[in-house]
Structure formats: C-alpha cells, structure tokens
Length: 229
Image (tube, rainbow, N blue to C red; front, side):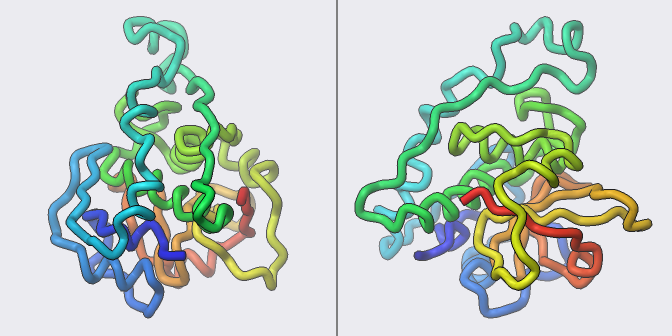
C-alpha cells in the first residue's frame, strides 16, 4: 500500500533539509514539498491521478468529523472548568476500511493522513486542537481518537505503557506506530512521535506539529515502540 504521505500533502519540514532515504514517505515529501507552511489544520491536495481513490478513501470523512464537537463543554467554560489544559475530547466514531483495500494497511496509512492534517498546529499543553495547540502525547491521542474513535491516555508516560501493544526489539516498524523517547537522563519517557517510515516521523514538539527526519538523536533516545494496528 502507498503511504498516506504519498498523497501529495504539502507540509512544512522542521529541519534544514528534507528527509533523506529511499522510503516512500521521504520520496513523496521531496517530490511534492513546495516550502509553503500550512495554517493549523490545513491540508493541500495537488492533483495526483494515480492516487485518486485510495487517497480520497483515507480522508473522505474528514469534513464530517470536523463538524463534530471536540468536547461537550461550552467554549466559554473551557478554562474556568478545566484550567489551562482545557477540556478532554469527546470520543469520535470508529472508522471502517474500504472493502477493496488491505484493511490493516489502510488503517496505518490513515494514521499518517490524520497526523498530516494537523501539521502547523502550535505546540501547547492542551487536550483538544480547538484550544489552539497540542503537546506530543495529546497530539497522538487526538490522532487516534479523531481518526478511529480509539482513546489513548494523553499522559505520555501512561500512553507509553498502555497504547496498543509494545513491540519486540526485532519487530519492524510500520506507519502509525508510536515511538517513545527517553528524556536526556534516560530516567523516564518524555516524548512520543508517530512513525512514518525509516527516515520520517510526525510529532508535536518545539515549533508545533511537523514532519521531521527520524534522526540519530531520536534513535539514541528510543525507549520502545507500540502498535495500535
């Protein structure tokens, strides 16, 4: 299956260069990158006829999902009821892979497609995008909730212990897997990112949600990985 990054989504790269490597995602980013940052939550779809139906199937329900309320708390009560973190998200409906597609591959590609939708969103300690931003674990929790109705714990350390299943050290990573990183002292998990391919991740960090190279620094701090699909 073609990775969702090969959909021709135009996204900013928070790095001095585009990702290297021969992976599908890195190749697609090099091919379609135009250097124009997106507004938070914005997505651009160039005309790529070879991807047509598959691309559309990954994101066809996004407008409908965007119409759903992110929380049951009225906007004027967000901070008064919940502090600066704001309210927690309502559960979103589950997603159904099209019958004609490889179901697991479609689900994994959709994780990436949902994550790309939020490229440009600021980094803030919030639970829902409507509060103006998300941090690393609230971003990954939001991606799985918005795209699939799957609730992950929004605390990075709890998410590192409970999201999906923990992968063995020899299991190859797949799109949509969660990569958990140690802090500098290697005393606790302090960050989570979404794996795209061997050279690319998507995460919420300084600078906001962005596509970033899966760098040597990430690999050196790798604690473990988990898989939902």
